[in-house]
Image 1 (cartoon, rainbow, N blue to C red):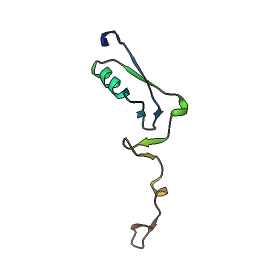
Image 2 (image 1 turned 180 degrees about the vertical axis):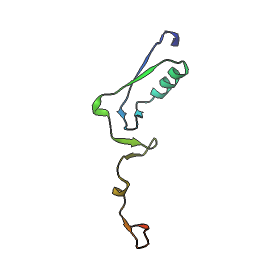
Image 3 (image 1 turned 30 degrees about the vertical axis):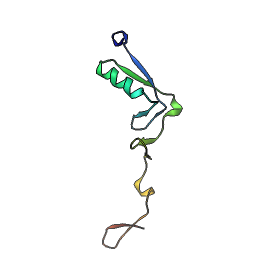
Image 4 (image 1 turned 90 degrees about the vertical axis):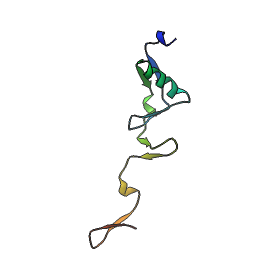
Length: 84
């Protein structure tokens, strides 16, 4: 059947700012099979699903931002920094 396929279109539930996407179960299997058979693929996603977040792993995510917004730091007299 893959001999008849010329392109693969996949849907994404969300598109992250690092160009990674999240989708439904089974999407990865189809994408991997298409890659193995050298079939070009295209990920389709509505613009309202584009997100500024970055997926760190399968469970946790993080927003891109200034690291100083996460913790408060102060400069010590010797020039070092310490969390306060």
